[in-house]
Length: 447
Ligand code: MV4
Figure 1: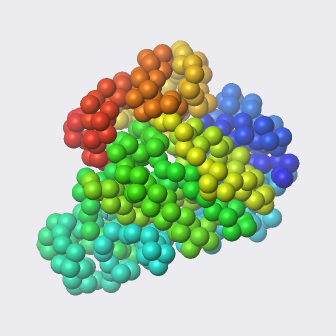
Figure 2: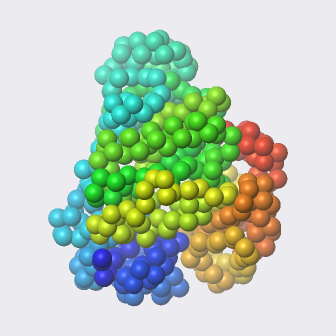
Figure 3: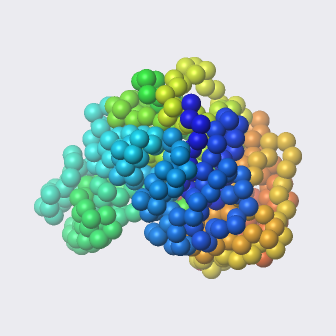
């Protein structure tokens, strides 16, 4: 096992990883930017090094500085958390070449699944349902039109180098397809330096369900059931839950088994998430494989009782997974609400500033994963998430009631947060009845 790990991240996920390491008896090295200097969560690490000025591009994203901190800190491994360098295959490769274990998949597997078109082909070959569409990249307008006429409009043009909703364009007729193709190509080239595109049938009003995976270095792969992340706005998730409500049991088992086939086919290791969209009939289609621990991982931890961060570290150290698939059970219902410092009444504009007073909820089945405290100043330089409120109860109805109670106890004075909107969603009948799709927020609160 590792004696010392560097955490190449900040905020709540850095603290989450320090906590796991402390329990495993592993020392931790933190990195921080000038904006995070002096933050209390850094005291939970054994050592901390400054890696640059506030802008992420000059600090948390600077590979040479992160590696320097790892060398000076004398660590055996780096945990990337989510965001920043977590899905950067080049960074994973640099770690390996410096003899530092990257706590995540190999750089080869990461590059493979980072190519969304390659991942789609892999899924097809592994008999994992994909959305009808192009058989690989589309070369030109003529080919895209032929495919669209075959599958029918509307179609969705996606960038091979995209993901997470970046670089997508819907088209509903021939004329729109032509301009969407040009725009998507230009956008993808500018954003990713790669203009490769593929085409899928546009599935309207989908639900978003993803399967948590763990794979060790000895060929063992397990799933940890699913999370429903349908409650989102512009690809920013607001509430996640497990199990997925309204998902037929046959769909659930078939989806989880398909996810295992895909992870095996990709020779993917460590923690990962297989993302699907689900239509109204419960038919599911593979979308992408996310090569990182995700923000919403606690939902899965609550229902399975498995610490995913500890599992990631143990797998990276070469330990075999201690469970067979039949040992992994889902108990009760878990919900997570993302607490963001945002003004939801003004287009979710970030609301940084000083937290004048923080009161954290508690009680049976209530978990608050956060690095903030009374007197903490939320920086404008990073993501606006300041914490995650997670509840676990025997049933979904009880989980919703518990979350309402916990949110009512939570006080974050001094800045605007997503709490009032979360409370609105929780009391909405469409949410309690699970009659929502990924467009719910924008349809229900258009402003
Ligand atoms: C889709 C889709 C409909 N049809 N693909 C958006 C994020 C990226 N991971 C894939 N996404 C979608 N792909 C087809 N063929 C709708 C979405 C989508 C979505 C997916 C999951 C969660 C939220 C979403 C919000 C808007 C669109």
